[in-house]
Image (cartoon, rainbow, N blue to C red; front, top):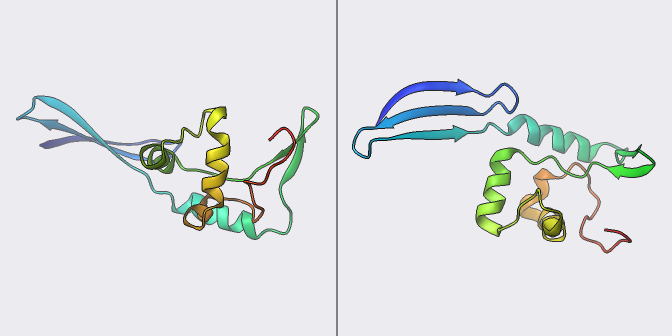
Length: 118
């Protein structure tokens, strides 16, 4: 494979490398995400004394997690959870309460508890 281009996504910070596979005669794209800054911010917010609740259009909103796109893909592949589908919300909240995924949360509160309208 021959590398011929590298691009940095200014929004996500992801590095995209493009290769030409001479054997298969196809373009190959590899994307790498540096999630360090997001994870450090999650830790800082989780340790903050305020819980991040805000009112938006008359509804109480609470920022509970920041999930980098690379981890979104990993969660979908490994757990079959699409973080963008409302029907997957209960499974996502349960996963975020798992100690292995605590680093994604911006709060120390449990997310998987039953609540009205949740």
